[in-house]
Length: 199
Image (cartoon, rainbow, N blue to C red; front, side, top):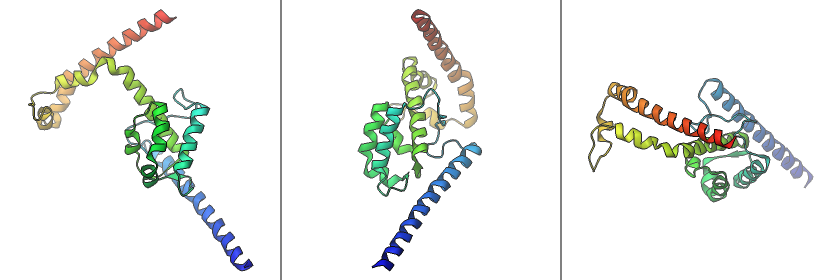
């Protein structure tokens, strides 16, 4: 009886220590990735949102996200892995939808994440999503599409597919970037005019 209970207590302590070490290891990996300029290890192509920035979640939303995170963390190890995210996807999507974050965000997350890392990924994606919505009126994708040569009904992007890297660089420099710049200047002008009316 007592001997078995002692071992069980020791095993529980060892499991807790293992969980703590796993969290510390993930934090060290995340810090190393950022230090090496590889960005956020959990989501490629999105910058990290620093705590306290204008894009940080407010306290109430952070608590809702943390509650969803904890309910999805089936093994209570403080990390969300791919399997947990897939099995309880609906729980996370509910909160992400409230934040205006795309559902596809979950598909882009790689590996296991601690809550702080997961929150930063969600904050960064929310920032990009809201900015993209603000730029929608500029129809940047239409501007870029109009610059792509060739193509046909069956393969509209065939021209992009067939040009060399050098030709693509030239296309971007001579056609795409000037059109995007002009469109962004128009958005900027509109924003300044709107802001001037509000003030």
